[in-house]
Amino acid sequence: MLVFAKIKSVQQKINSLKKGASIGFVPTMGALHKGHLSLIKQAKKENDIVVVSIFVNPTQFNKQEDLINYPKTIDTDLSLLKSVYCDLVFTPTAEEIYSNNIKSQVFDFDGLEHQMEGKFRDGHFNGVGTIVKRLFEIVTPHKAYFGEKDFQQLQIIRKLVQKHHIPVKIIGCDIFRENDGLAMSSRNSRLTEEYRNASPFIYQTLKKAKIKFGTISAHDVVQWVENEFKNQPLLELEYFEIADEATLQSIKNKEPKQKYRAFIAVFAGKIRLIDNISL
Ligand code: AMP
Image (cartoon, rainbow, N blue to C red; front, top):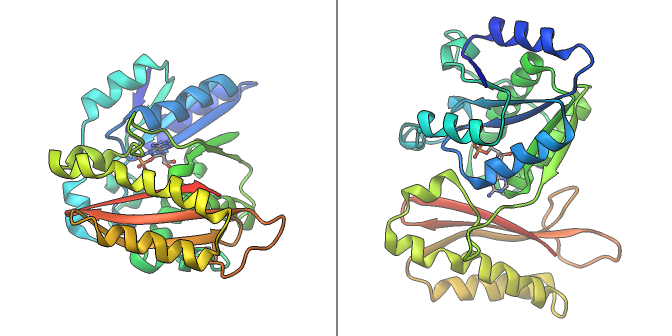
């Protein structure tokens, strides 16, 4: 496994390998867990060479505190990547990516960016768009893998690629969960035992909401979920929405043949957790 921190050297290596070989790419912010590894394993199956980036992108954090406290475990990350036969790792510094201008480009994602996470994390998707577009330019992958754990991000990346005519196929991957149902996340390592024990309630509630959506209106499901969280002193619901998968707009009434998904964001103390389920 080769590790590069400089854009020029990673590009040279990729160009020399690329002749006839397909490149799969998995962008991450490190603090790797089995969720990330599931993306890498899928990429390994579908490509000749797998490139993983580890970069905690400053422009996608709306709170400086979150950026500073984001877990950094580079040595463990590199051994995990070796264990799944990753071929190439790109670990740039912020300076390498942004020079001395740590700023986002402003994007128009046809309104996807204004829903859910966009309402609560100002500028987040401009930051995501900026870094992913830059990484695609550097790595030039044939396929890139993103988790449905961040479903809104996945749809936004699809829009980014479509609008900017970037020649890469975007692959969405299933959410990887702990045995008790909590969606794996780098942030989970920051949960105290008390909050960690309370957090499986999030996915349990999503599963019940999915069943209820079969018989009652979207509006009533939302009310039911909001009430459930009122009885959970350790978990503070930020939002629960039922939205159209393509537009991410919240729905009032179900239409036949449309695909819907329920999205949730919850604070477990200071740690913000997100999850979603297909309905
Ligand atoms: P992150 O390091 O949090 O930016 O995540 C890097 C990639 O891994 C993103 O495409 C995430 O959606 C994906 N990912 C994170 N957690 C999970 C999970 N539990 N299951 C599947 N994909 C995940």
